[in-house]
Image (cartoon, rainbow, N blue to C red; front, top):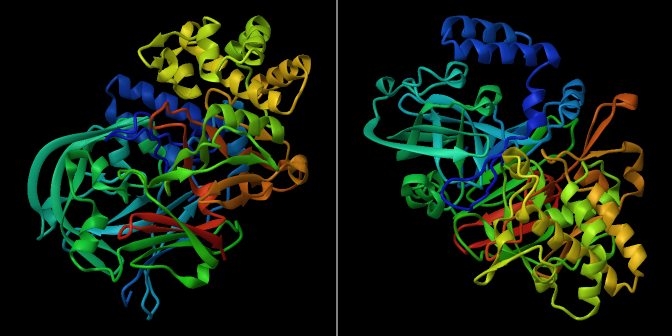
Length: 546
């Protein structure tokens, strides 16, 4: 999703990938034009600002049966824009964008609505709201639960001016609600009010669906986005206003044969067809063998327990006792604990930004941490024994662990919490090396190297494309089944020859216990593995994509 969670509450933390934001522009000139546009807006010169934005935009590239499908199409990555993003130290932090969808009917038991794939990282489609249906490009997002689109009453947000807007007066099936609401994302927020109308998804028409008319979209994210709105496929537990999600009404109104939907993402950049979202079942031609099903552990997000995590053939030990995981169609990358993502970056040779806190821990406290571990102190008590973490009841002060992005944004490069977080990472790394009977000198050197590979403040991890063949496989264990990602699958690659750009498919996310450690399995994982969301049996299933 381009959604991303911090507090795992009703409002998700949506992190739109910054390099994909940059990809929506062509070069530095348009970036400068946008800054000029912002300046105009600050001066309330709305007309002049809109005119300037129009100039900038001119430089941009231009069912039957019981199952419903959404097909996906591809757009190539913009190499020059990726370079610009790297220079700006930006990164694809879970970007979701949308463009239109074509409806396709199979004539079988499957209804198909074609989805499109923007920049090989976001999958989107078209829906209709009202009678006659007004068309909107939306993200089908398993990481959120509300449907929202821009409102015709959105007057003062640029994003609304350049996207399709819902006009209640033009729908004969509109019912007024009017209750105000808002959703806050990591990259901004939307606010507006609830309304009710019919929603068409391909051949299916959901009657009396409550949705949000967004009257304010102040974030840059929504200005540059290819999508108009979002259609959440998560559970009602995380629905803002406790409104009934579209998917619930599809099932409740008997529009689908089975309470199941499934995703197939085509990761072939040259393929015309980008993939399919199937409502009401699965399409056997899009997977091999049988699905491995795992029960949901908590409703809200599609959350389950994942087992050990391996880099090459070596266990990191971090999830040996289990980790929570969320499978999220709206997240471009794979997000996981900073501790493990750092080890992955080190193993694959990704370029990271040095963490001063981590370096400080190694240089000033490394030997002390080593001695405490060797003496038999429990790993979860080492950092408090070293005076770097302080207990508050049963929690460390670092139970507030935040993403690298948040710490950087808040400017908190000093203080106890960052040092505590760095210490806890160092303990995990040292403990793992102790099991391999390494010497203290080698362990401290190794940890120091890992510090250099901590993801940059915006999560960027650039890769030398020539190293791909020598990179290790990354393995997720789900219900005792190994799901392997090869370097070709977890590295995002675009361009040809000397213009080739490679970016790691892993980004850092830290969620404290009891909800964490947490993995978010986004499009990088769902590409190789066909995914079934079984609402009826409260489970998710994975099989090798075909």
